[in-house]
Every structure is written in C-alpha cells, then in structure tokens.
Image 1: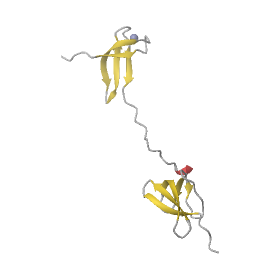
Image 2: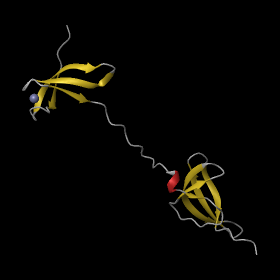
Image 3: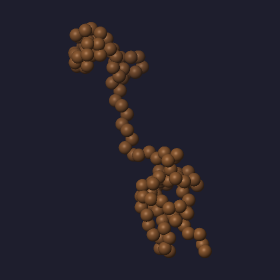
Image 4: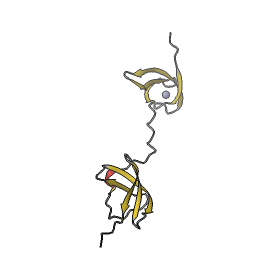
Length: 124
Ligand SMILES: [Zn+2]
C-alpha cells in the first residue's frame, strides 16, 4: 500500500492554491508530475525540474573579441582573441615593460594569465 501524497500547489484549473494529489509521474521523466486538484478534480502536469543555474562566469563570445595584435592598444576589461593560441581572454591590467614598452595582462580561458605586448612601435 502506497500512501497518497499531497502537495499544495496553484491549480491552473481553478486558479487557487489547492491541495493536489500526486497522481503519477511521466514515463522516463521524473520531473514531470501529474497532480489532481482536490477542489476541482482536474488533473494538471507540473514540471518540477529546477532551472539550471546560470553560469556565473561571464562567457566570452568570440565574435565580440578583438583579435590580438601587438601593434594595437587595449583597455582593461576588453575581450581579446589570440588567433595563434585559439584562445579568448580578458584584459585585466596594463603594464610598462622594463624596456619602456607597453604590455597587457590577459586572463585567457585556456592559457591562464598571460602578458602580451601592446602598442608596439615599429622600429625606426
Ligand atoms: Zn483546481
């Protein structure tokens, strides 16, 4: 003998919070459950599947990335794409190199934090 389970749920038929009797689940999908309202006796199906949590990490979109080239100048927060590494990253800092050049620190998705030359001046 299985006990009849009841839940309180908003009934789509009578539009009220009602005591619903669990009638059964959909075959092969435990998330979809049939309930029968004890008020109006209408059966309704509810999907109890918890919506997937949004990825908190901001995903980089390749189309929005600027392809990396040493001659370009970048700003912190910019998304860049390194064609040779096939890797996307975000500029986290700007630095001056020891020889007076410019560099950016990029947090790459695959390669991790990397230092890249920017604003490269053509040799005179
Ligand atoms: Zn109802």
